[in-house]
Length: 189
Figure 1 (tube, rainbow, N blue to C red):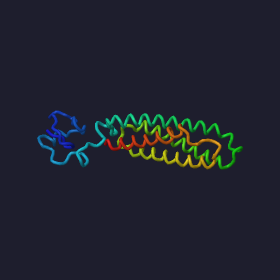
Figure 2: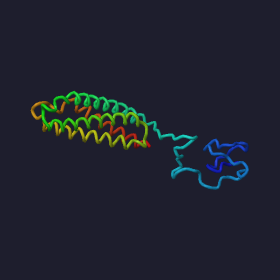
Figure 3: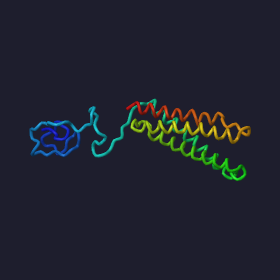
Figure 4: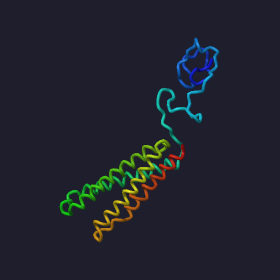
């Protein structure tokens, strides 16, 4: 006999289809081959529901996974470092003035976005359906870092060197790697 849901051939005494898991109506399905189309979207790929639970799409694109994990960890570390250093600067807001407070708030937002981007990069590695999210977060972090450099350069001109090796690596290059990893992950689908 054949499954009325997916058309797979099943044993005459079966109560469930071994391929799709649907219940078999033995009385009406005896000897009738499946006449319709299987329950699949265009392109022949099965839906994510198999055997009672959602199975997220995963890919074996190892380079994208490794890149996302490493970039995610480094972006997370950069975000934590930025957040801790900004929180330690909070007592000096009154001494440095209102412009410094606005820059510090921007830095705090930037640090939180970096932390979220790092976590998302790590959690979503190997998920092509989430590659675009990781890619966009990487781009947002890079843009925020450029804005931060412009603000800091305007506020602290001559006082400190705002563009240093750690800010270039953790705040600019690594988020670009996060975006590239998200892009490669998306293309692996």
